[in-house]
Length: 450
Image (cartoon, rainbow, N blue to C red):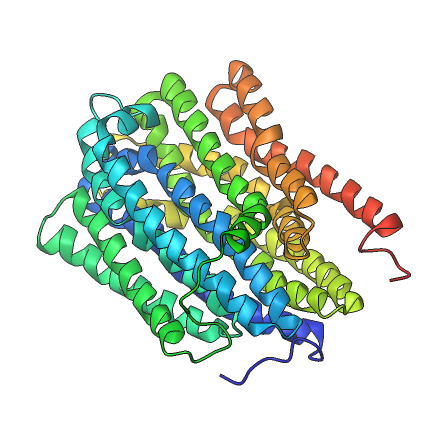
């Protein structure tokens, strides 16, 4: 791929050149979970679907660990590439990779050893515990691959290789789909087969990306270097995005326990389907935010502040438009997608399940109208090393306000109150974002005189 000129290419064209490959790659990544849900729901039924829903908070924790180093490290690498300091960028990349590999292996084996305790903590009851354990134990043993695949992906994007990142995600996703079908429908491996397919799919994608860095085909590649100071700086810059995933995991735990108390296994099944469906719009909006990061980081490092502001404002408008379109699309066509996750005989066993899932989806998906503004803003300020501002935005839309609503609304509105908590939390967080933007326009990076 011809290298992009991040200093001179018009912002809309440059943004789309990152957004489109990122979108395709992230949609491919999202199929890892979505396909698991479709195949498991069709083959094994609602209990297996609920079991994966119970296990779901594990994935944000693994992603949070990856983001803690990779997002900050990638932004720093892009910053130093913008300054013409490629060797420093390679030290950062190598330090992040080696540390992530070693610690994720240790962490995975630790989680495997305590799998019973973790399953119970996640909210598994006696009925779901065996299924949750069977699924999660395989995920734990392959946790290092789940961490390394997106780590290599984000560094490839910052190495001006968005197409390679896209190809790796697509190939891994296609293999995940094929293996899910084989393991569940042909070999009858059960719910563990879905976990194994996920691990093998990530492994293939990671290998495609790793060869780029091992063969030194770009500005970033692995060298024999490990810098603790660089790792600590990457960690500091990655705290906002990592805290986002940790907050999501905490909220999933709270949602799971609250729903279990109010609606039992059936409520968890409904919530699982809604969450599986929400992966697609969330992924699309996250791709918008990821399109901002390499452009803003590079131009900030090159001291081209006018272009930094331009990409931010463009992405804000773009994310709002995308959010509105996504809500309208899922509101209109969601009832056609829900049956994909349910067994064919569900109408005779539980005639109201599909209808109640659609009602829950309509409420929960309202958060996507404004979520993109929050994601873009948090990513933008993180990319220009304004970590504290990014952290405040992230905490606002992931945990702070939603937690308040989920603790109060279910007492008055039951299950619908739980589903309403997230969109109300994002609405309040958006008010915080607009306040920060106004402040930055007066005396910060968005000041008109810059």
